[in-house]
Amino acid sequence: MEIQVILNTFASDVFRKQADYDYIAARANYRMRLRQQFLWSAHQAVEKYLKATLLFNGRSARFYKPTGATKRREFGHDLDALVTGVKNIALFKFEIELEDEKFLSYLSSQGGANRYLSTSAYNTSDAIHRLDRLVWHIRRYCQYIPDRGFGCREAVPGMREAVVRSITDPSKKKTPHSFALFAGELEAVIKRKPEDPARKALLWANLWYGKKKRLRVTYDGFSSSEIPPNEREWPGVDWKFIEEFVKL
Image (cartoon, rainbow, N blue to C red):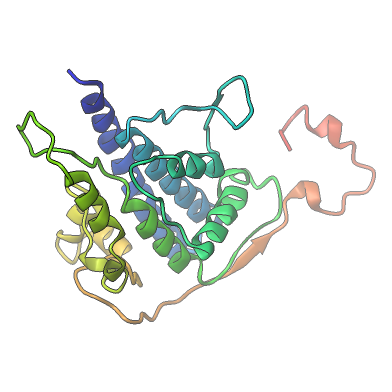
């Protein structure tokens, strides 16, 4: 069996499928006003989409070698390293806009590195829409791009380029709901009955995913912040001793 077939299976079943569920969970957590749970689920979704994209393109989703380094490192939860890895894929030019990069950095610091509330945490009322936008832009690339039809032995000239053009087609941004991944879990959830809880969580106040184009949404947003114990005013505390009990 070709190695790419195995990698594609891991990419779709272990990473993209779970990322779709993490994304839905993040939206549900936001609606319940669970800030850190929203941020962690959002971070996990983005991390898995990026790792799936690497696998779909025959790249390791575990190891990478930084520029100038002699030894390879593990990606872990490092979104910046993962984005760099995806940008190095020669088949396409990975498009991520400045606003998306800013939110991705925010998720790195507040979702990944701060999942145990080790530093001050916060979110803004527009966080859910920024997540929707980031997921849509990244998830487009989260698919295997074939060079031949199913069952064909010979590559079809220009086939991959045509698929890439369909991914990066600027008109899709005007009608984001019309873009769909083959065998994607989000697409399957959207087709469920209106009363389905996962479908409700996915479509609630979502400008990017749904059955029809939405120009505006009305929703009850929230913003909050929290200071962890190690950043509060505790006079005379030996924090090195505290670290014997909990990692700060």
